[in-house]
Amino acid sequence: MSQTFSDADIEEEQKHFSNVIATFQQYAQYSLAANNRRRKDIYTLSRGDKELLDDLGYRQKLQEVDKAILVNAEFLKLIVANPEIFGHDLDSPKDADEDESDCGALHDHSHGDVHSHSHSHPHHHHSHSHDHANATPDLTTDIKHQRKYKPTDFDMDKLRSTLKQFVRDWSEEGKEEREACYTPMKEALVAHFSDKPFPESRQNIRVLVPGAGLGRLAYDVANLGFACQGNEFSHYMLLASYLILNRTDAIEQYTIYPYIHSFSNLPDREAMLRPVKIPDVLPSALPPGSNFSLVAGDFEEIYGVEYEEGDFEPQAGQWDAVLTCFFIDTAKNIINYLRIIHRILTPGGVWINIGPLLWHFENNTTNDPSVELDLEEVKILAQKIGFVISNERTIDTTYTSNSQSMLGYVYKTAFWTATKA
Image 1 (cartoon, rainbow, N blue to C red):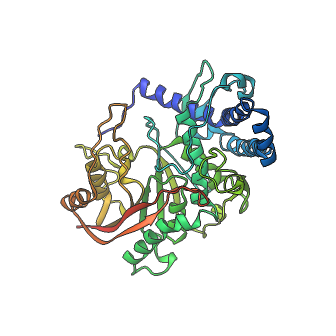
Image 2 (image 1 turned 90 degrees about the horizontal axis):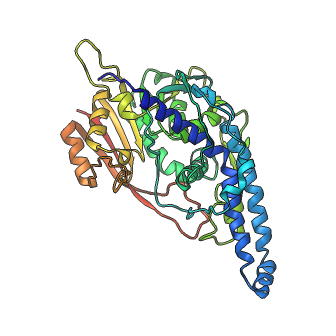
């Protein structure tokens, strides 16, 4: 089916992108206001209580958090410094700092180790690609924003999650959590193509990573010699991944403070205020001849195009492997996800999966459909669609968690290798 978008679709896409940019730009204003609420609360206390807090260094801690917020803000400004690379022409919004009084009552709803994972689900429909060296936008849109957008708590939560995603994908600190998922997937991929034991022999093996996030799994797969394409549709992830993949010149070039947004479940000050340096590797240092790209857009819209008379099916049978990490539960209709994966694989191609079943559209308020199966049903469905499942096991792992927190959520993720019959 051909993709045609109405003027309303395009306008919605433009508006969403502009709102995401505004969220990045207003991070400092929002977060400083949330921290200032804590200062105001001190003044509601008795003199004796204030003196006790001063003895603990509580006000000093708030000052340190302010400084960390400003460091994060400078990093986030780098991410959105040149949004025109994505093909959007944005009007310059009023400086967020000019309107700080508007946010006086805002407060942070983050609870530290939030037990969810998200690739976000804005209703946008664009598609473009960029590789690890050069961006090639194919969007030509123009946006007019009449007044400054005021980010919601939900917007800011996505931005805070993006900071923690940097830890998971591109820091030494995130290595243990990252490798708990990525290593089994990479090992299964190499094992499936054991007749190609050397990286230089894998260059014609095409691997797709939907829900690629900040791109580390796709990068690692390309580093093994495979021709790898990541797919992502969250503007937060796309903007952030462009900086880390295309505009990073040194290991540990950037410093962020991902854990300063919640004061709950902390054993000590270090657990909240410790800096994290990114990246732990230089993304541009892929071997010569590497084939690595990221494509922006909705997985179903890009890879699920069905055959029409007179047209060819551009993705059918084009992929030798599909790797889904914390992805399949982002489906509204899991049947369609699995059908697409099966259709785009070559005969004998492999689907490698790891993740929970935290159905993202369960109990949604947007009237989106949601098919919510249990694990046994998902596996039976996969078999009915034409997969032969093997190498099943459960892998315990966290997701963007603060390793020093007093609270942590552990997913008992389902791992398997499935071949196209």
